[in-house]
Image (cartoon, rainbow, N blue to C red; front, side, top):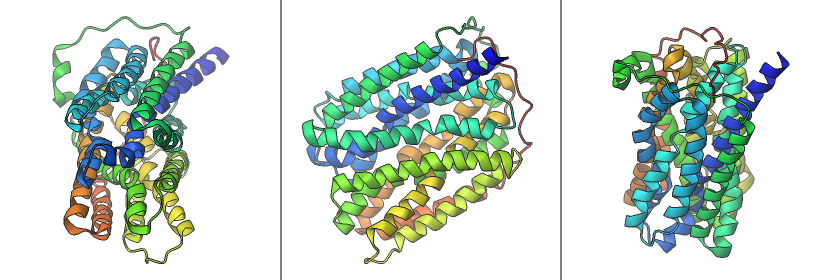
Length: 407
């Protein structure tokens, strides 16, 4: 039993390390966007594209990654994905022009599609239902942790030696994280590859009504998340004359709020809602709508500390929801389809990740005002709540045994 418990925590540790280090790359683009804006002569819509276009690759690769997890094993997918992300980031840093950079960013997104289906499938199998929401949320803190590290470390590097060298450093971190994850799991066996059944390539086995509604709601939730992290520093710089280095601290604060929120909502869903995930997701959506409305209509004289507090609270909601969302997708699927169910829901959500910031930037460019754009994001959070109300939740599945080849 002690060995089994230690094994479970090694699984969590490896999944978290790889997620954090990959997220230093993927979440690093919003932190580097203000620096790349002048170097690449980008308008605001192109800033959104720079920060999120990699998610086009993630959207394309998520379902194949989910199938790879279900049939090849979590460990292989997790480690190979981390190494590939780091190498792709280093190559992208060499691109001389934005037109050449864009396909390389998409390639980064392809590699970065791996940690969520791989790590989530391992954890949902290893840990019981009572604390599953919290454990999954701990793993999902890897994304805002990586975002916070990127916002804290990459801007100073970009100021000192340029954003390209900062991106190379982020790529090196991703490779090191994958190697560390492999070391954490070096004593674990790996199950032999399973034969791919005839129906594995069909979406019908995972594209259920509930999974589709959950994915559609996530379009709007991810829109809010990535608009906030992409534009908060630029918004403060352009409207309140906050220096970019100081604005990056607001981005750090948003990600710290996300870390707190993922732990908080995971615990609330396990304890207060007794393993239900839908209701806390609706609470998150409505709370985020209020937060974005406040951000849109803040008086000009609002002190910086009040804006910082609002950004922190927004981070707890619009960045803090992901853990219980992944748990919900995992729990509505049969054990042998969990990787694909997570991948299916996340594939749909990618529309909000790369489409939202581009649309937000285009709206600001067209109107010359952030106020209308933040208000539109607030309305989109209410749309997420309406979609989640359509989900029929059965509650957490019975705890699954730890498979021999998990991660």
